Image 1: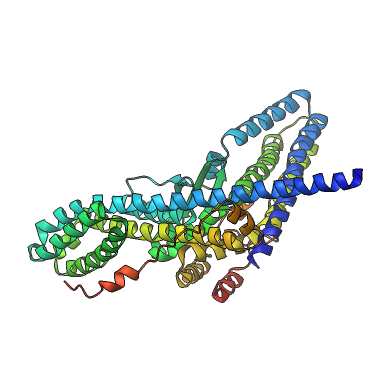
Image 2: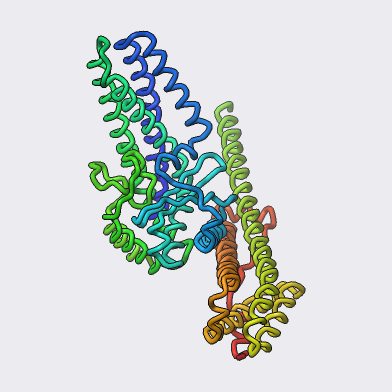
Length: 287
Length: 183
């Protein structure tokens, strides 16, 4: 069953690359439209912004993603929390035989959640303050193991790229709407339409992309988390605490949903992860 | 004639590609098992480095636990200097001794509130987990390697290259023999 799962994941990854290509195409397309609709100087401005964005995305995607989701590096000041988290992560890095320990980030939110991103040899794992406060050591270990498994299998690499690009299309649209909203030039109405279209398409693409690759990867990471920790019960109770805290506020862009242990925005039509009840059931059935 | 030649050349090519891929798989698994093995060593050493610190911290607060502390110091030196098998056994024994030490710490509220002690306790607990997880990782990779050595067709290449199965680390065998050392 696990083997089939991984074949399917590979298949989904290929589809994800195709969508990623489409996102880049859409980037270019919107630039073209802006050139056509607006005056020349605005076209130049937007192409400049797009190029700058792509350059930053290419060189610093990790920094960008952590900025977008409001995650800060865990500082040593936070001594006992930092010590415990670092230790748990180190244990799972050893269990999963990762070549390098990912950086640790924290998000100030009461919701129990976590995310993993990686880019080449660099990787980062983030947890919420709620996770540190509400979960015991073993439960935290289960969630961290799930994230470590994403890094092991390279899921988080593609997810990160997808996220920053989709966020880019969205941001571009947002910029157009914001800057031309009060504009008195000709065609400002047309530009706003273009901007709104960009925002919608960026958002939908991010969700569509996640739906393609996420579900199976999440299931695989759940299975792997139990294999790494050899502690199924702790992982189940962690899942239950994640479920019980989902009403707490966690303010991240909707395009980032697929990065998280449990998608923070419930309103999305395209579920990126299997519903948490289903995940609990599946883990309970593991031998 | 030419057809037969193509078939032979093609067949040899396929076998060659398979052979190289399988060989690389064997090597990479063996490297990973070596890594996991050395990780165990690293963590045992880390643990040994933490012990003197712990002994010093506890000494100031809990004079009545002198014999336990001496025992811990003894086991530590066994971990540092002993034979591989002995080291594992000493390590397992140390885990027990530490556990009973941390249990009696309940009687010393001042020690229990000591930040330095709490940090050390967390470090030691984590190191113990790390040893266990390194052992688990080693055994997992060893299992993959040994299974590959046994199953067809990779076993053919394994036999040709004279590859030996890797030994598993049995976690608690030695430990069981010395279970009734009470403190």
